[in-house]
Amino acid sequence: MPSNTGRRPFLAAVGGIALAGAGIAATSERANAAQADEKVTLLEGTEYETTGYVQTADADGPTVLVVGGLHGNEVAGYEAAANVSDMELERGRLVTVPRANATAIESGTRIGADGTDLNRQFPTDEEPSTELARALWGVVEEYEPDVVIDLHESQELYEGDVEDGVGQAIFHSRDVRAEEEAQEAAETLNEDYVDDSTYDFTVAPFSLPPSETPNMFVHKAARDTDATAFLAETVSDGPELSTRIHWHARVVRSLVWEELLTPGEGDPEDPDDGGDAPEEENEIPVARIETDPENAEETVFSKGETVNLDASASEDPDGEIVTYEWDVNGTNEFEEGDETAEVTLSFCGELPVALRVTDDEGATATEELVLSTV
Ligand SMILES: [Zn+2]
Image (cartoon, helix red, strand yellow):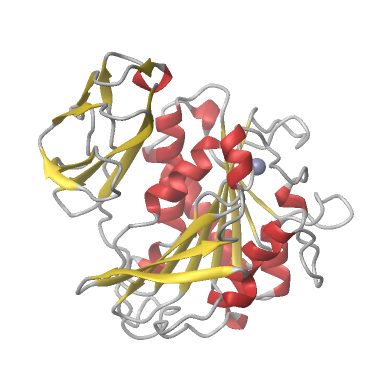
């Protein structure tokens, strides 16, 4: 199997993108001094349409692809993928497709409108089997990620039989670097973020034929490209959703720490050659929205009603929250505000509202909920 010496050379920052052949359209979002942002649309105009996000740091570095929502009922996976999509990079490029299987997510089911399990449509050395699978694979072909991370959830804990459950675990491609990174991520998680050791993350290499689950996305990524690939699973029966989202986001940050979050001076493989010394890591904050009335997400409101939003339960494990930003108009734009916000439901339909908190070291976290009005 490929070792890290076989990894693709780091890609330069991307310029223009022509993705028409893959069913992908790219639009430039906005740019700031540190990071260029771009959106890509997969299968535009179809019921499978979904958005990918591309963040490119000023400094060159590896490309990482994070996907979530291949299974539509694995909520923490796609929420966490969305949460990490705008994280601040030291170098390199982060591509995220948080809601890979939009129709499955919409129905809250494992399988989407095409009736197939999206994570079984990626045969090695062959075209992916469905249109949606081909569109997702088109992202891999376009951006040629050095690292691929796929976020899932399992109903039950792994107890020696994957049929019953594979949570909480980080599975990795069969190379030394992937194993080291997965071990490190699991150790960090278990030490600092998992209170109940029942939920400690385990680490295992991808299984091999014939015992493997066939045609999985990460298997193809690891075999058809020389990407280092990971599949992370949290367990959905038990821990709260916000905790699981936080765990997934931590797994991602840990796995991409060296690739994207460490300034790249000298040889990234050589710890003595600058840029790679492990530093005191800032812990990302947790964004939490509490509503008055409670359970606003499960409530159907009448036009004209007001919902109060309270972010004071948000926290930063190693510092403090310094900024609260809200998007309460469904515009996808955050505006700086206070710990609380108020939203008046002035039209019928669904209104997504979002909170973004920033800690004293500049790390952000977001939380979103959807309010329904008839
Ligand atoms: Zn899954």
